[in-house]
Length: 172
Image (cartoon, rainbow, N blue to C red; front, side, top):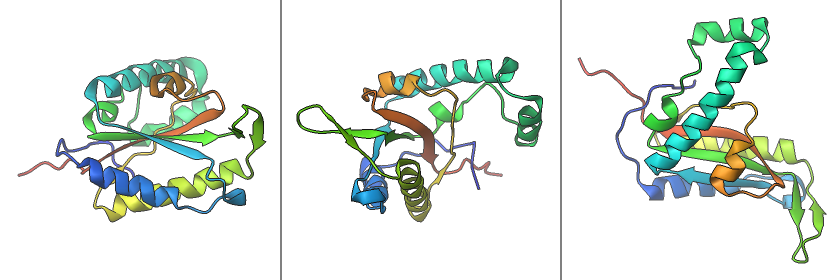
């Protein structure tokens, strides 16, 4: 179950570190762990991620997606605006390392990258929930803007942004 509305209640960095450590222990092809996680707490950085993601969403909703896809999203009530990217106390951006780099700069093949990263994301989400938190799996398309914003190299492909926090609840 995904959550789109987050409480502003803070979450300690230690909790986020533990969540990422749990995901980092996921099994992977040839035990290569071809993933990287970038945790973002800084509001100005979250604003940059949101602005770039909303630009991609604008393209998506104004002709980049099929009518069928837009219709499938309609019941969720999603659109161009992505307030969860700044409202959630933390974002974790997941990158898949398409190939590794040896000490001399040469390429090293990584095995079963999509499968391995998918398993690691599953561990990540389970750890988020185990910590009593919630998340949303956000996948703007394309996501290449995340490499430059997060300072990641070209051999890494952004896979997902996970806003993380406590769910927002109206107190009556």
